Image 1 (cartoon, rainbow, N blue to C red):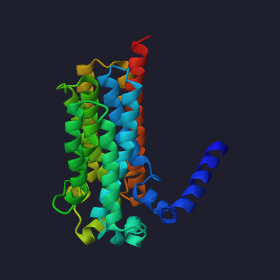
Image 2 (image 1 turned 180 degrees about the horizontal axis):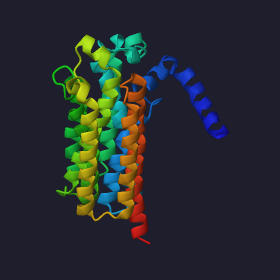
Image 3 (image 1 turned 45 degrees about the vertical axis):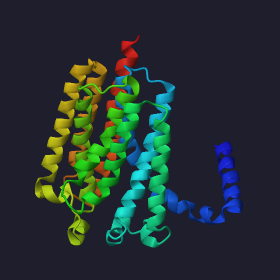
Length: 308
């Protein structure tokens, strides 16, 4: 820990001297890219790593592992930047987002757009170390990620667009490993879309009161009083899709135990959202990090013990 603190101190001193303006605005860029709030990175990372493990039958190369882990971090950060660019006129009217750097004036919309472009280019450079099919798919992935923040103006289903954006990593993991996209991989894609819509609806329930006032659309508004029931149905379909995927990829008992753990966490989330309070809905949303972790753990353990 002392070594890391020393490295941060040296880097901070270097920036302070060589690039004082950047050093002064660095905390704002951290806030813009949500480096201080890694929940979104984990929600994107777990299913992507799960796809990579299944595609490689439990033996992913260190190169691909590094590419997808770093790429996940870059693209999640890029998505946050373009989200704040799109929502700059809305965030000041929502209690939870009033301190974001574009609202406070610490950064400009141009800063956010340049950050999105820079991080996206970084992610693309990583994919140049894979294959042509994966590179081609990345263009669609970036386009959907850039489109998502603007969808809340036109449709009550922006969460579905986010689901597609957050599921592209699964397909790209298969193409990177196998240089082809098997039909079974779409089961994992659909499952992740269903799960993403469920947990992002929980997230939207936190701001529903404000979104109704400013005219922003979401599934939380669309579902109304049926929100918890529909979330539960989406979670059930997520588990069913993974069961179908398990049969296709011949995943065994450890994976099923992971699904049981995910189901137990969904029951806990049902309890958290019972009163539909912003605090309870936000806790339920955060709990999905554990859902992704236990499902991924089931995948890893399946291949680990199958190889013994």
